[in-house]
Image 1: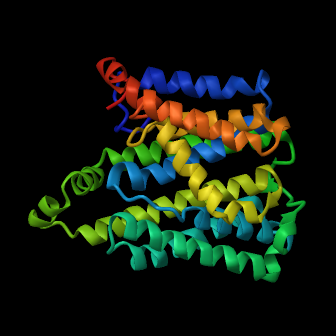
Image 2: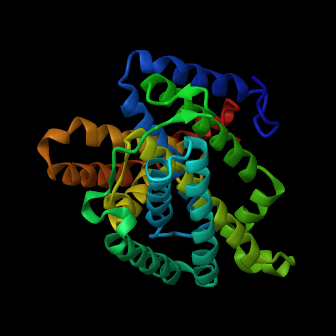
Length: 316
């Protein structure tokens, strides 16, 4: 397998080992659990592009995740589109929404930016409640997974898993390339010292908007995959709880790291799965774990390990 140039020679064995683990893991672990972790890992990675590398905290990313899930589910079920076309439609909508929301919000910073994204996301939630295509609280159920490229039957759980894994790996490699490119260096400069970036002649607003749209597109991709994995798109996907959950995943794993969001996502999904039998108490347990992690691992789990990983060339 050929890895992109942004992955160093010392990182390649580690990346290939993780890929090998992903290939064999469904033989020992329930594939649907793994797919949920991969979907939310991609969602968190998309969110981390904005928070970790630009320094913008969005409380409205559920809009892109959820509406992409709705469009993909609707296109696959009502229009009978193949999964790849349904996913493309969902991602296209998330990208368009990202451009509009980003254009409205990107000129504000800090709490003002966060509140604008939250307000617009709540507007999206209200539309989802009222729109006929979403079926309100029932959601879009029984979404067919279909035949990928007319060749691969995604109703087979293992085929669906390897498709999700492939999309996740390619997306993560793309995001890694973005943050290690000259464009990514400008994003970090904006995060660290925006006035200085402006003084050097960079069009900061344009860079922020591009990053916001990219983040929205990958969040939409995660939502589209999730709707096919669970064959369902629901109001939970567009609620503010989902926006809060992706913040939790990113902070737990480590903001500004490539692997952190994935680790955080799998941790949150594992907690939800393990404590599913105790109902709403799982939220309290999540809160306790979050507080403990913030106190003991202020830079997230991967953030704490970052110096050790960097010395061994695993992270850049």
